[in-house]
Image 1 (cartoon, rainbow, N blue to C red):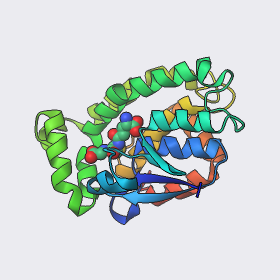
Image 2 (image 1 turned 60 degrees about the horizontal axis):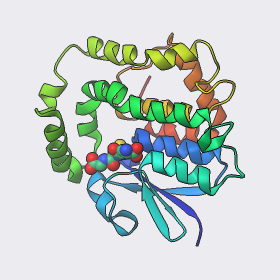
Image 3 (image 1 turned 30 degrees about the vertical axis):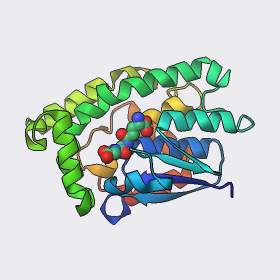
Length: 238
Ligand SMILES: N[C@@H](CCC(=O)N[C@@H](CS)C(=O)NCC(=O)O)C(=O)O
């Protein structure tokens, strides 16, 4: 048995929200691989794929399973060298790998974290009921306060802070069709995953229509029809 199964976080109504899982979905599509996906509630993650993993995405392949989107991207690159590279010229030895690692390291504290202040209550509403106690416990420990206190403040100001945080990649989107240049690579998928997450979990409009990142995101959708179609399941509004 050598098929690929991606275990993804699932909210109510089988909405798949995770930015890290979307990155891996895009990576699998980029490599042209056959795969299937399975949903996991937060509280089911420790039992997925034989157990031992704390977070999704979890990729099952052959007899093994691995977690962490960056580890999975590198695994796919190493395992399928004959398929289109996720990192471009030089593969994991080239500049596309270092650029992707920089974005991978930057985006969570710089962008996901301020975005959580916009969406965390929406997330709480949309997670599966059995996950609520786990979610509150882990997030309130992480934030050092209640989720209500964490996201206090004016919505427009919080959205503006997220848009400002995106300036480094917006600067690239103004100059190139994709963040990686003429065609998308894993660096693009790291940022695209964030926007799939936003639109799956909240009606807040983090991506403004006149943002130079909007045509870039539309190019990503156009390039990956399966993802574009399956992510509409999560689309909650403009
Ligand atoms: N560094 C990991 C982070 C993955 C992550 O944080 N996943 C979240 C879902 S978006 C998760 O599984 N959280 C488990 C929990 O909160 O119990 C990656 O890149 O894959």
